[in-house]
Image (cartoon, rainbow, N blue to C red; front, side, top):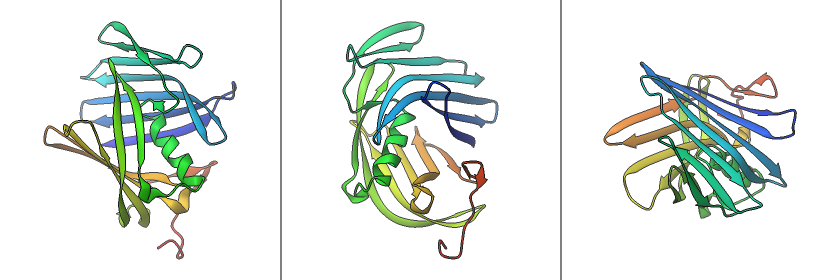
Amino acid sequence: MDLERSLKLTEKGDYLLTNQAKILLAGFIETSVFEQHDGTIQAKRYVYQGTGLISQKRELLFDPELNSIKSYDKGAWHDLDLTPMTYDRVSQLEQLRLSLIQGADPKMGFAVEIADRKKIKHYKLDFVGEEIIETDLGPIPTIRFQRGAEDDERESNIWLAPAWDFLMVKTTHVEDGTLIAATVSKAYLDGQALSITPEEE
């Protein structure tokens, strides 16, 4: 899978996090718009748009004043409850990164609520351990998390690089026996290309 991930500050002061992926004749673009105050994210809008053979669209609109979420899926809107710990699929990983930057203990794991389609799903990101992964940039020291869910329908893993502000450098997802994986091949921070130094190896 080819995956491009970017984070930008908009003119309105919000953050725009974008994932764009392509697998053979199918792919997707997903965007998350959120605010960030003192290391805490407030999601505002999420859009998932399938491309190629998969053209489905999903959307989330977060309203903190009404503690509600409008969720668009399969041509219809649905109402969901919003709590301070509710994120979309994209912003929840950015909240994890910010929590770690602020000194949260990764070994404690993280519990998150994700608005998805017609319901709020509860997940636990469990700390697996420290690992060195091989990439096109060289070996990168990482910490690995595995996501558990209310059911065991899926298995997901992420690897974050502490030396790069816990940037996600690898992800895997298994569903219905199919493995989807992506590993970093290049990365930029404030326009500067990231590279491995001898101290990091």
